Image 1 (spheres, rainbow, N blue to C red):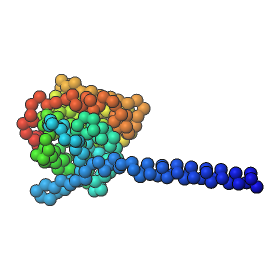
Image 2 (image 1 turned 135 degrees about the vertical axis):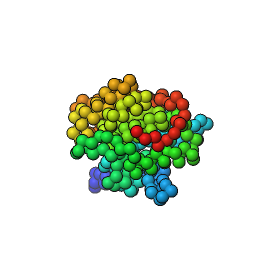
Image 3 (image 1 turned 90 degrees about the horizontal axis):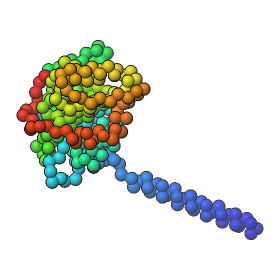
Image 4 (image 1 turned 180 degrees about the vertical axis):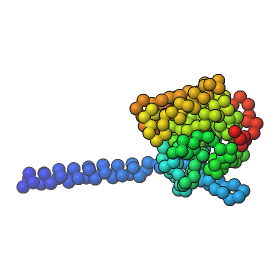
Length: 274
């Protein structure tokens, strides 16, 4: 009888311990902040009422003008929920704001729309004279944010993956005097723009096993820039498929490299056409 009571007491004690541990874990999980909530959900609208959803992350107030990081998502994150664009690269964006003082802007491309007019099935890589609607609105959004925040006009940076990589090449080709640096990841560019963007600091990334966006597209852009006298950085990941943004975002030198790049002068104009 004494043994039975002792055994029951041990079971009760063990249950209490496990119950407390479980409660502690639940409380911990509940108290953990939603990192995505740090990004303000906003919508930009032009004079005609065309809208572009975007997320904005503004660091604590700074005594100096703040650099801006524009992040362009891939095709799988299109839509109107103003959330999916944070699927990839959120940690990088949070680090950019927290540790490097970046204002981070992450617009969302509407479903069935694109950052640039690139048609891979037809092997069309010539950028159009006019930007797509999402790209036009994005460039206007940057102007709008520059009017509302203390922005360092010499330190606008752009990063994009996959379809956003296409958009990164498109944006710097369209306005090469505006961006201090660009980091296109597994994107398609227009080699005819090599001379136009030769002076833009570029660090491109791609996996050599990419079957969605073949690596030859990035190789062609790097060669075109070099032929025009530019000195782009290029990191190619052996055996990596289309998800080359994973190792690219993990590159410890990426954000420090961006911060080192500045425009020599204030950009003279915007919406410059190729």
